[in-house]
Length: 473
Image 1 (cartoon, rainbow, N blue to C red):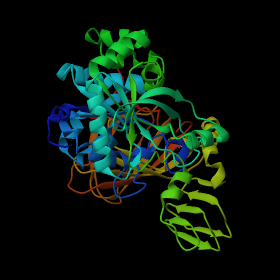
Image 2 (spheres, helix red, strand yellow):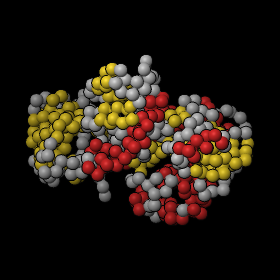
Image 3 (tube, rainbow, N blue to C red):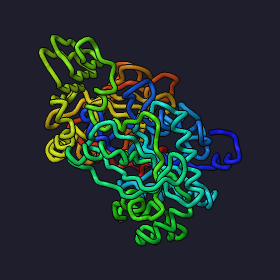
Image 4 (cartoon, helix red, strand yellow):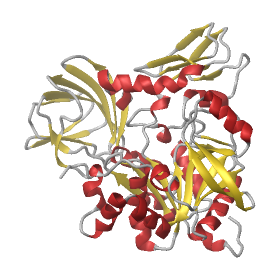
């Protein structure tokens, strides 16, 4: 931001919301690896791109990232790659309760440090192509917030989009900034076309800037239940009763009800990467208009998105289609029907929940595991443990396990006995026996784990000790 008489705007805090599940990009995006943690349009993940952009205007020490507790370790790992100070700003959300409670979790820290601070709320999973223009809009919004406004960024619509909410602007407050006349829900196609033609509507970007004290006053007025919970933070931690809170978005809870809403005309290229059509439009087109990623053989296909992760995809004679293949699931749909992917996810949640929860390879703070094969009463995994890391001391009620070391030296505790196993050595873990796997060496340890029993899911874990704080009290 410019160094001028308004440089006090540099004291702004940023709250980056990174708790979404990204269902519309299934099967690439899963509950345990949502789109903000994926590298979709470059080497860095969408979260890393958002944080890197924010750091151009806000010091790392004043950036807070609110994420689901399932994602905390992966978020911290990604943030460490940018700046070690960012790790201290990760806020764990114990349950999904929409954006306003998530913001209030972060506000506890901000209000303690600076009750008169400005706060920018930013989604973690959007694409912005002009960081300098974005920073200029942040400065405009910050100046409005200094005057007591609740500012948002309005994106100029270039097509009749039915997947976004809209903002209708009123009179101009300052160059490029307007009072908000109304927030409008996602329209049908004909109304969306009317909004684009009218010229005074914006897409709602989901980015906001407001005074910290002003937000709390608004919460007290509009959402007294949330305010009472926030006020009680001296008596008990905010996370203690978080799951009992109402699910309220900041749009509905504050922005649509305050008479101090303002919108900044955003002059940067933006997309929320909300579905596969967005990725097609943004992707580099080959000769016949196809966007191709991964190991793909395309014959006479045109105007299609063809994506493969982990296996060969052969496509013949497709037009205006989306084909996305991962190791355990494949999506095939018309480009005009990509909004219905969320319906597919909802159906899978009822019948095959594992397909929307995780990929075959799942990252953990100690390393990762990959499901190689599974059946009714067995599951085979490849487990990788990072150097100097240990899994929790745990047991399983419903399964026994057999471990074979295929690389490195593993430290294994079974009951009261601890042994070191090297390559090609194995050990049995009986059901209901305390055990722990660790890596005392300098290289990763890999083992093959064969599970057998009547129930093999990840929630059949009783933890007794865990250095990662995953034991439920």
